[in-house]
Amino acid sequence: MEIIFVVTALAFASVLVLLVLLAAAGISAVFGASFHAVFVNGLWALLLPPALVLLGYLFGRNSLDVNHPEIVSDRIPASFDGYRIVQISDMHLRSFRDRPEVLSGIVDRVNAENPDLIVFSGDLVTVHPDEITPFADILKGLKAKDGIVSVMGNHDYCPYNKWESEKERVAAIDSVRAKEKALGWILLDNAHVDIVRCSITGQSRDTVSVIGVGNISSMKQFETHGDLEKAMKGVKGTFRILVSHDPTHWRAEVLGKEDICLTLSGHTHNAQFRLFGLEPSRLVFKENSGLYTEETAYGKQQLYVNDGLGTTLFPARIGVKAEITVFTLHHAG
Image (cartoon, rainbow, N blue to C red):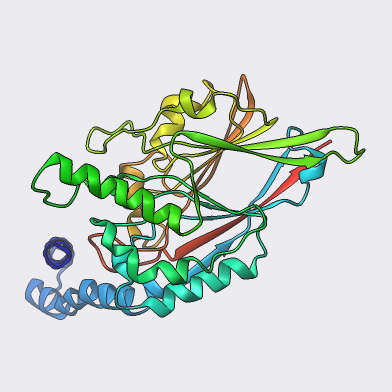
């Protein structure tokens, strides 16, 4: 499948290059230049698409960005000032089968940030739960003071494999869940955890809530399994963080509709492609990469879309590095 996708993408890119060359040669001919000379001399540009893919395969997919957004809110308790949350997303473990040392390095880099909490925002696998087994020991190396919480992404429901029956697929989904829990992660499958600290005065207890849902998407091609109402039942935190794999969920069900301060998503990978500031993923996702902020009746609500760690279909990253995001919470008051 990856080979077919790459060949198709290269063919499409080559056609675009040829069309640009034809246009450039035609415009040059109008001003007296030789159409043939301009066109032939420009054919070297056909080498650019395969060269970019090769560079993205050899170097781009192994490069890593560590971003450090600061989240400031008067709803963050003072006892949580300086609290550090590391978000990772979209491992697609099959994409690390020929480079386990890269995944090991990512784990070391996450741990070096000394996180209070690690959040994984979905898509641990690409097609099959067996992808987890070879990397279990590496992933067990992730460490955070308050543990690791995770949610299921669209790929974690295993819809892209040819199963003999729906029963077999359900068993695969259950296997993903079981293997994820065996890593020591807290799978927030339409559930939440309340993280509690003693207040600065010592007279009360402060709470930040982390809410996790199964995949919820406003796009028909992606299945919805999550239940936000169920996940939020009994939530106690003054500052509420939602972990929801697909960023379209934010605008569809969260923004201005629920009392959630920060939503952490992934899913888009920013199409694993950015060139000269152009991001094709913006044509599909209104919120495709990075931090978004809007003022609503609930105050400031923010969404962060992580670019992910692995790859799908296209086994390269061009202008979009794998990402670790380190959030530091700050009390404003």
